[in-house]
Length: 130
Image (cartoon, rainbow, N blue to C red; front, side, top):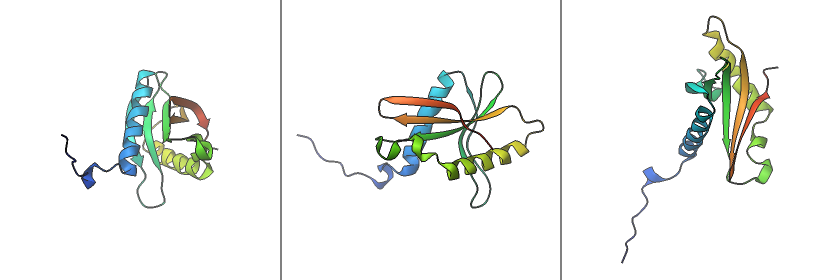
């Protein structure tokens, strides 16, 4: 006969924990495609800034700013619909902040990795800084 083990609050699936798992999946996917991790979870200082889930280096030297989105269903447009104009502006803001630290910025692009049930989509150059 089995017994029940009460769930610990520490084991509860938080949004942060689910996001970390999605980023792990996307990171592995991109590494399998030949990209190399530069920085994970880059954040600008202060409130109202932006965050970049993954900053990767493509084999050709391009710096790739990656937004990771995971959805359990395709309702409300799925994962891709959640990367709207406001989110894009925050990612671009954070990317510019990151690039200011570099002496000579390399070519860059903004990609999105969509993780949905049964499928992973990698949208290269999904949006631009303009």
